[in-house]
Length: 119
Image (tube, rainbow, N blue to C red; front, side, top):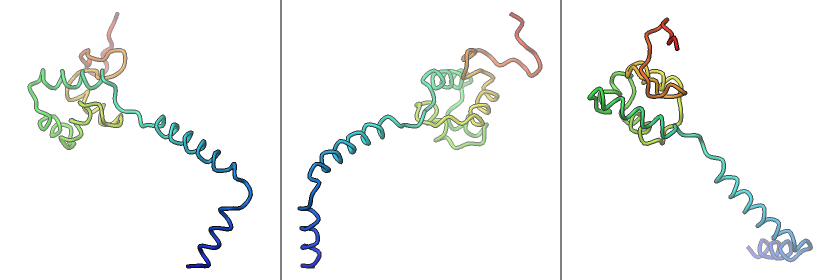
């Protein structure tokens, strides 16, 4: 233990006293970068369209989850905007609800396959 304390004292008291300031500066930069790097969650528009379409059908979150073979917690996360976007789940939701939930046609009814909107 004494050997370790002496070793720490020697290395701590050595040259290069300015290094600690740069370490603090780097730590601050790292903290800032860490806060900036967040996963993208579903948009508020997606959440709103999902909730509106589900309630229009008269379904609970549990009902919808059963229809798309997912857990009710997944529906709740999408409606609160906390879910990470998953194209497969989003497509299942759109098909079951019959409504576009993303893109420029969000909120509009899905057209049957093979029929395009002629506008």
